[in-house]
Length: 109
Image 1: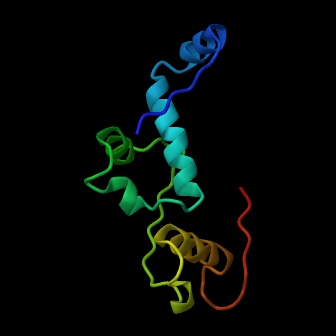
Image 2: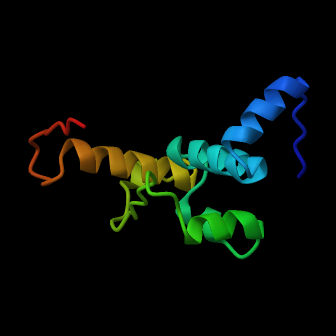
């Protein structure tokens, strides 16, 4: 897939002066949002059929990206959801109840 974005020249120059590799920055933003929102999983990002730039980006992710792997099976009633949605729910539940003891905790940045 190719994505084309039409921007005024002055905007392009300002963006390129800040971010030299605009293609990579765009790919990072798209991949990060898709991963963060549960549309795609880490496995999908790193799959051999994923574009090389995407796999390269994942192999050396930016410092701000934290990859959390889901190590437990989600509840059976989540089976109808996409893998990314199931994993996002499991991660959210783990953040709310990290000890699994029914007591919620809230992490403040």
